[in-house]
Amino acid sequence: MMSKQRVENLMLVVVVITATGLASGQTHKEFRFTVHPGSNLAVANPYGPISVKSAAGNTVVVNAILHSDKVEVDQIQHGNRIDINSHLLPGADADSGQVEYEVLVPADASVSMRTSTGPLKAEKMRGDLTLEGTTASVDVHDVMNAHVHVKTLSGPVVLTNIKGGHVDVTSVSGDVTLNTVTGPNVQVSSSSGKIIYNGDFGIGGDYSLTSHTGDIEATAPPQASIDVVAQSAKGTVDSDFSLEPRHTSFTTKVGSTFAGTMNKALSLVKLNSFSGKIHLRKAPKPAY
Image 1 (tube, rainbow, N blue to C red):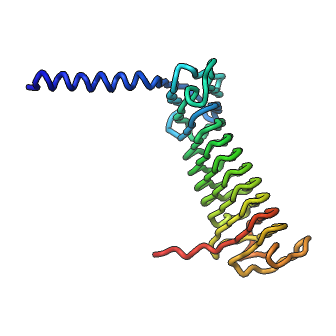
Image 2: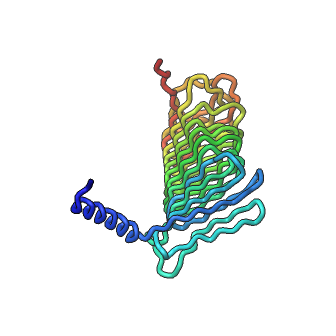
Image 3: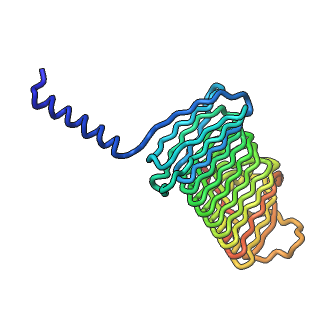
């Protein structure tokens, strides 16, 4: 049997915890929507993260944590389309207007998410994805046979294990990293950010990595089958591979351009920068 003093202490702890929770001003809300195959979800959140994962079934579940009473969640469903919007009230700022979203959707759903601060995350999807952010970081992984469109101002972008779809990434100053990203069309464009590619460039794809002042580093295994062209107007260009020369419409120049093929040259790879360095690296042999 507990003493009176211990009971009073436990009650005080409960009161303190409860008061702390109330003082934070956070509110949790959950929304559920029944959809049919091929649904569409759009989430607009000026401040705060958005995370989307696939789940079995035909239900979209939206969990939202509101950081204050200065923001509301507007939600509406039109047939197979769902719109979720963080509605800022007078006096809201980047802190009080923040909402954290965790969303579960059917794997074939098409999802659009937009935020300023982020981060933005999506995983294990088969539907098309559109992610837009300002300073928000972007993390997309394990996506199959879907279009992935990313647009950021300065947030870093990491795409991992994206296969069979079209990939289009545009960034002003954020670094872009692609890990095991393959598909019929992969395009990355950045003004000043660094572009890093790690993978084998697949079979039959068209890859274009372009940065105005940022460096480009592409790493591929010796068995990669590529037709590669690399150009940098004022930067340096280097390759770890002994490429088979090929005819080009421009004059190649050692140190600033190169063009050649490896193996059966099944994928076209274009690496372009105005003043950044370009390096086609040979992946190290895996350790066994």
